[in-house]
Amino acid sequence: MDPLTGDGVKLREFVLDDLDAYLAIVGDDRVTNWLSFDSRDRAAAATTLTAIVERSQQPERPDYLLAVTRLDDDRMIGFARLGPTGVRAAHLGYAIAADHWGQGYATEAARAMLKFAFGPLELHRVSAAIGPDNLASIAVVKRLGFSYEGRIRHHVFTNGDWRDSLLYSLLATEFAAG
Image (cartoon, rainbow, N blue to C red; front, side):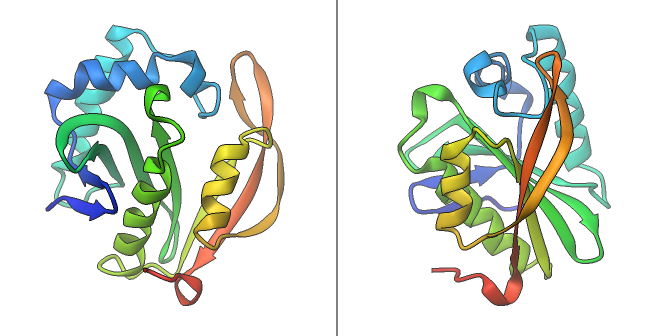
């Protein structure tokens, strides 16, 4: 798959050489506090990264999990994922390394994924489930035009406890690609 680009970001396939950058994200409690899994150590990150690379090479790939880089540097600073959830529907997820927070990378990576979702993939609906306290991520989806649908109680078990999620969605007819 060719890389996707956005304002200041490029989304490309993962490679095994991304391990250190991937670990800097999935091994950082500041980041995983907002994700659906606990922080991973190097061995778990390596196993997961290998599986990501293998999934991306399948003829009928199960999802699109892409590394986020800046346009001027190929080093991974985050990742974004579209995972199928039904007929012409997918769930959007994203994470950016804590050292790069507040610079618009999550918004632009999500926007690039939405262009891909509603363009070449011809999806009808994209949803995002976000922890209620993750105000930065809620701001990202609102900025992109998502609508709030409701609260999913005890949706994710992470960091030793159940966490609710707020569900947001965007339809193809609502997406402004600009």
